[in-house]
Image (cartoon, rainbow, N blue to C red; front, side, top):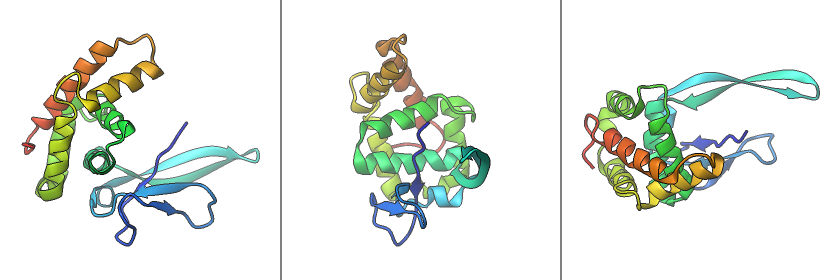
Length: 175
């Protein structure tokens, strides 16, 4: 299992790695300025075994409506294939009602924050999933077929285009 941490610290430059006190390697990528993950989160218990004994830690986890715009800003800033894959996967496979439900939840929670830089990031998101040959679409299809070789890349690409179009047609989105 791989866990990726994102932070939203006002005193850490955007895209810098934030380290944790008492840890040698875990860190987080700063999404300074978005504020989404810091304002809408849920406490989740993560459990593991350390030296033969069970250990549980409560961790703040960004909600679906916070994760999507925060990750959209990360993709807008970095343009990494992994970011495009992550967004499409969450939009298509969330517990909030698929693309339409995700859009409605983002709009309900962050309606007043979907302007300026976020509007530009959403425009970039739309451009990266506008067709089957777009960068985000290809990143999603490639990663999914690497993880699941039995899936069809063309079907995955079309699912990503349709899902992202539905998400971006949601209430309040007009990149």
